[in-house]
Image: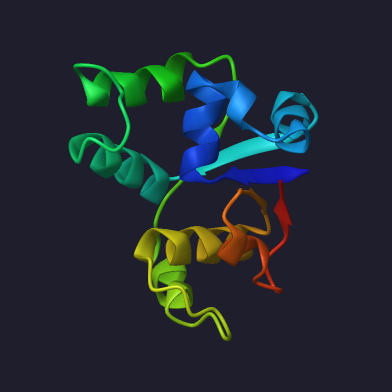
Length: 132
């Protein structure tokens, strides 16, 4: 299964896996699943750290590099493309104004990934396949 990790999912998997649901933890640990991150996830995590909402340590950019390159969790980094940007603004019935959530939904749909997320608004968006 191809999985796209939401920002909180990636952060929790790397720093406090006990915050993940049992299903999410099992899916991430399953070596037959392909894991991916969106470039927007990197941006959102750094923004949250800059605002003091999460702690990535003294060098938040080093945390990101470490958990992309050195992580035991293999993953693909998916770029934010023009097609994803356009699709993020054409999600019929999805009223969430958060641009990061819209980009994540569009990325999952565009790449046919299951989005691993605890976010209720994303889990309730019918065209999107999610796991939690």
